[in-house]
Amino acid sequence: MIHTDTIVAMATPAGAGAIAVLRLSGPEAISIASSIFTSTSGKDLAKQKTHTVHLGNIKDGEKIIDEVLLSIFKNPNSYTGEDVVEISCHGSSYIQQEIIQLCLRKGCRMAQAGEFTLRTFLHGKIDLSQAEAVADLIASDSAASHQLAIQQMRGGFSSEIKNLREELLNFASLIELELDFAEEDVEFANRDDFQKLISKITTVLKRLIDSFATGNVLKNGIPVAIVGEPNVGKSTLLNALLNEDRAIVSDIAGTTRDSIEDEIIIGGIGFRFIDTAGIRETVDVIEGLGIKKTFEKIEAAQVVIYLFDAGKFKVQGSKFKVEIETIKNKYPLKNLVIVANKVDKLSLEEINKLQAAIGHLHLLSAKTGQGVEELQNKLLDFVNTGALRNNETIVTNSRHYDAMLKALEEIIKVQEGIDSGLSGDLLAIDIRQALYYFGEITGEISNDELLGNIFANFCIGK
Image (cartoon, rainbow, N blue to C red; front, side, top):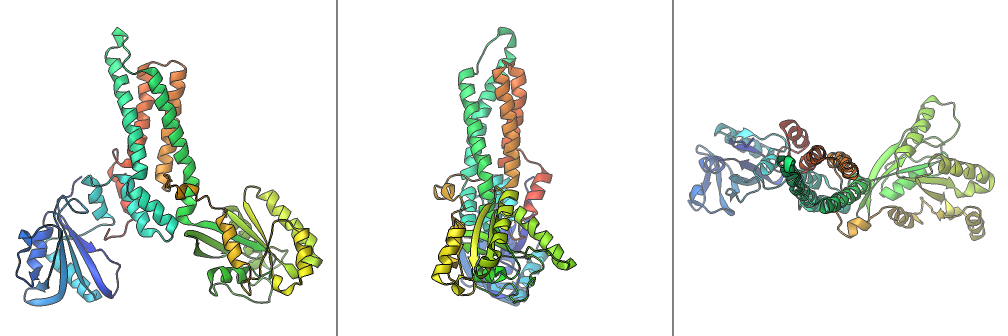
């Protein structure tokens, strides 16, 4: 599967900018770069040391395309494990295309999505889970998702899986050896030690599987649904949280007829806020569809903010309480925050009565910003950042999660086999299958289709 041709692509996003970087990788990378580059000092690129930078011009014949900085990384000490050349040119779209076209005419081909990182994996520079972390790192948009990607890219997760697989493989080898001496009834694999290993693997797998729930929300953002009666300030609250006019605000009830979503970072954690249509009886077909979608958004949310107009509590308090209890009963596992909005219009006495009537109440004025910061801190309390702070391994990839579930299933079969006194040949079948799923995670067992699916999600220049 090792590629022998030389590829080229932009390593920076398309469009104009101060500078742009093109990357070449492959056995002819340096010779192709030499054929289009003239060093200011007259140096021969082929004779230069690895990890050196050179000033010169990219030329198409006698035509100068641009003055550039060219970096050389010789195999195996490069990102891909091949000869790599990076050209830093001016960020003109015209210059970028001219250099790429020139490289193609000299023998390069355009890189496919993720092909540089694929070559890194194929040359053994990183394993498959680390390669996937590269894409996560590029896509990270919060401190939490960045930390998770960095940890995985540095091999924290794959190290745990590799260690488990190696220990299990050692015992599997001993059990397989026993099969060769079946007639002598020899036992090479100590069953007590094997039992301890199976218990250890089960514990580690369960911990990693359980971490996926935390990792998934930290990576993708915590969905928060803002619900309540029409015209209680849901859109105003969303705007206050986002610090911009994202949602339409009006005194007309039912203005929001669909859900509006946006994301902000609070304390390094991403939150996806969903402003939903107000919950009420309506004959308006369009608004009715919006209200139906509100309940769908509550279903998908991890946190629900129930917002009501504090000024209307004296008249509609019983109705608000019923709605709060309905949400609690219908979604007992949801984190619910009850927020009284427009408290800037209430007297101190009215606020005290309100707090006495509803426990665990958050007071807020979305219009003035009063209580908004406190609400943000409250939302952070719902996020389990303990594992993140302690730098524990957290699983964020659904492919890894699925493989670990299957591996755990096989390990449980092995445990049941030990308990029931199954022979080594039958135990070996389930052990081999568990090893297969472990290998799928790190790429020790892979195929073209799996690699194609993974790297298709990468950007071209990575």
